[in-house]
Length: 153
Image 1 (cartoon, helix red, strand yellow):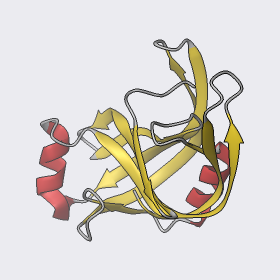
Image 2 (tube, one colour):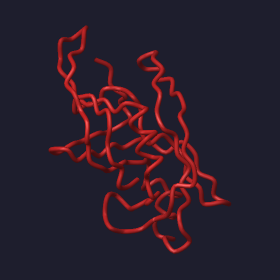
Image 3 (cartoon, helix red, strand yellow):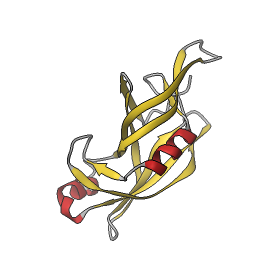
Image 4 (cartoon, helix red, strand yellow):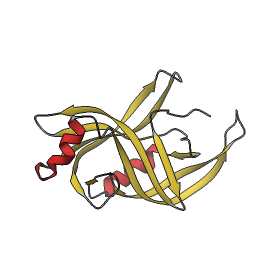
């Protein structure tokens, strides 16, 4: 099984949290960009399908929060499907790439982006359709998340 080392994923029951590194910061526009999700098996043994993420983002209100707390940080301004090549595994993954505006009312959060304290995106939501599969190479089971409700980035 291949893991995207720079990502972190955790789940408890049907709640999911996935963290991905920030890849671009536009200081003038206060826009932070990066992958929110990728379609690879994570360290917790889950794989979030890109189609599931695209559907979840289409229904998403766009809330950007600070570290899964009820602290508003901004809004998602755009999202799109994109590919990511991982040179460590020599594989290409597909996922959802986002651009998020960090509010002027969240200056402390913006400063944490600028100084490198905040380094990535993380989604939070509830899995609504899953199935279990087995990796052909390792024989390890993993959960495929085929649908979820996205509540925060």
